[in-house]
Image 1: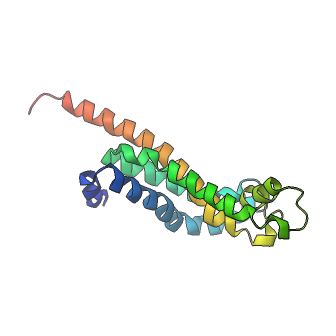
Image 2 (image 1 turned 45 degrees about the horizontal axis):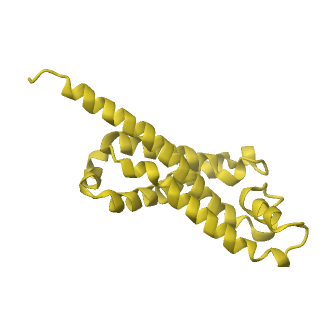
Image 3 (image 1 turned 180 degrees about the vertical axis):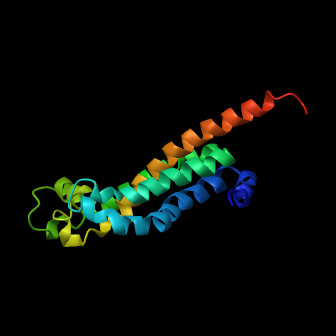
Length: 166
């Protein structure tokens, strides 16, 4: 099945960079959503919840397996878009601080809505966690796993080049 993804190898750096970002975010959410729904009650209202651990597992598996077969360095850099996305979301969310009750500072408001437990972000229905924190964390995990996959890809290519011609 992954041989169907070989068209990505022919893309340049920038097109593959954006394709990998969308695979990292949308692919991991699509794959990890159901496991997250089934296992999420185990870490409900804890510090793990904003990061959607099952989606992160899916992002790691996807990043490793794709880049182990494709060997694209662009996949290792998708975390940059995730950080930019989170930063833009935090900046936008901070503009609503003056309307909130119970937060002593703008930073506390943003941290509560993006990284807090469910009880800390209940005023915003915790949507910031799903729309900003989860994609950022997924892109970071995807990038790290893609780096490990790239190393494995290079090692396998090196091993193949050492085989005698047959």
